[in-house]
Length: 289
Length: 255
Ligand SMILES: Nc1ncnc2c1ncn2[C@@H]1O[C@H](COP(=O)(O)OP(=O)(O)OP(=O)(O)O)[C@@H](O)[C@H]1O
Ligand SMILES: [Mg+2]
Image (cartoon, rainbow over all chains, first blue to last red; front, side, top):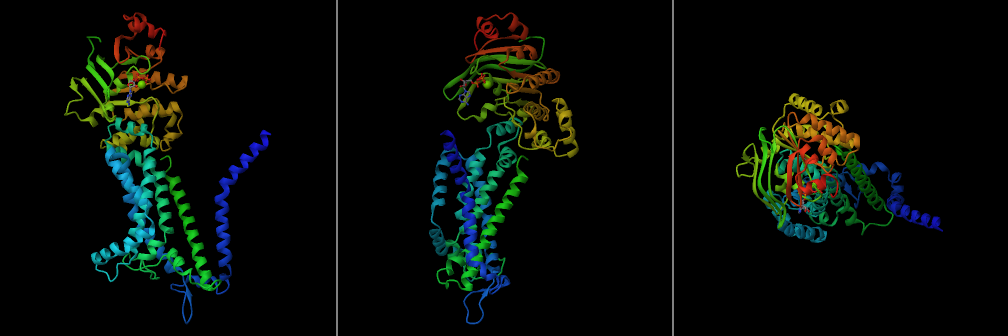
């Protein structure tokens, strides 16, 4: 009696824990199934062109390199922007802000976290991109930088909230020990508390980066959608997600173009996978030290 | 307490409040130099609160205040011109629960000297060795100074915390139940260590363990409900207490 109930509970627990494995495998299988035949027709090497011209009277070109550099550029810029704001903001909220300051700050952070990305994209289009255009004297304000700033807006609340939790869960005893040795508050924060919270802070940054890589709508609206290989923040670029979102609706089912879009999906998945791997490496390096 | 020894620390008419809740009542006490003073009394009687007056650790608890004076060699440590950083360098603290930083053994010890401006690697290495020897830990850890302090046993961690406190060359050590979370062997180790440290440092130790107070301390102060009931040489307090309350407590009739 008891034993089959234990068994059932065990099965439910294992099942729940393994769901994510199942889903990842399913996604890979599904993406692979749609993309598979591209490998010999027209050939896997067709993906490594430097141009993405999926619709053409002459020869279609499915080079995903410019889309990858577009994603990498926007992601890298957004990450550079969100780390200082997110992490330093978290340090302020967790360690330095007074209760009343915290009560004002927290709701705004939560509101920002909840703004739909279309709305943020709208804001980027109407407000931010003209500013960028004039500020840097560009022909267009629709640039990688514009997209990166918007993505940072979106990711900062996540980074901030999760980092704040990490900082707040550092045992009080560490603070007391540091202060009792004569350290001041800033020394205690930057030399004891932040290092102790680092695994959590890195996890927070990774969550933010994940959000940035996967975000579609806002970048579709403001990065200018020019698929070219560049590392210049002031160029227009096109990301992998934006490409899928923009073209999936019109593509002919089963065509080479259709399959190429699935390959983009596969590479997105691989990139996030590598990102997680990297995060775990960093984590292991810093833990306990 | 005694007249022919130099007074290192003193408390003059100290009242202490957590918000409106008074935790200490008019405490008068002198702590002689290079000696061990034990603070005893039932739980919640204010021992920790009193101990934390001497390195101003109560400052970090919001909503607290006090009246009266705490003197460190005749200077009022709560006066406006006190340098708290300097004070905490001179008055070190060891906590009830060992709290090494999640860093290497080496970095734990050098943290204090480092924040006080010492960067010279050679000097820091010397300090690490000296402090660990002072805390009777050197032989056990000298081959793994760069491993995490979290890998040490509980007793070793507490001695590391003592070494960390010694590394900034304090004159006073405040110890709040430093052995209460340790096994008998580690406790004996710490007690032995306190015996050695009293040659160079002035030590105040909070303890719930009567035998421990009797073993390690020269002077004992008995607290009850925020009042200092009786203080004197440890032998007198244990053998011949003047107050009925003290006698009841040290003989284990309550507590
Ligand atoms: N942070 C705090 N905020 C409010 N009240 C406190 C705080 N810390 C201690 N108190 C109160 O002050 C009184 C003295 O506490 P204290 O910790 O000094 O006692 P103690 O003698 O060290 O007790 P124990 O032996 O249990 O450690 C108690 O009534 C306690 O509830
Ligand atoms: Mg206590």
